[in-house]
Length: 128
Image 1 (cartoon, one colour):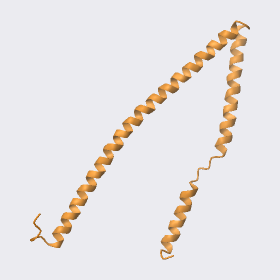
Image 2 (cartoon, rainbow, N blue to C red):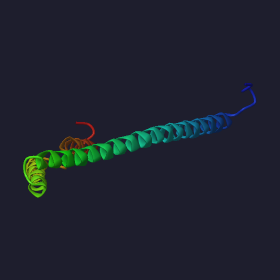
Image 3 (cartoon, rainbow, N blue to C red):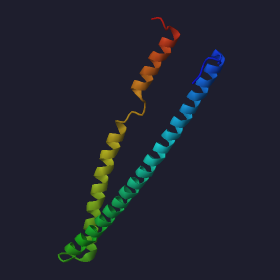
Image 4 (cartoon, rainbow, N blue to C red):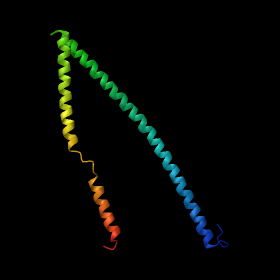
């Protein structure tokens, strides 16, 4: 690059243009990478959803198997009621446990709030 005939303004303008082009290219690269990762995440999420559905069907079919197994000992209606009560108890225990844990969740990002307060204080008095 022959810079003998270029002024400082021309050099700054060229540098600014090059930096702008570089930033656009970096932004496009970042977008492409994010799109690629989003596709991978979408496929993985679909697989997890299918696994959850398969687990649900397994639970339903095992419940039916238990009903019929108990049906060999007690009438089928009572066997179905026993399995339903067992699922009701499991649901109640899971509900109570989940509710208790949810009460301990604090949605406020305490560290972030503290850091923001410190930043605001520093901005007011940057020399301290």
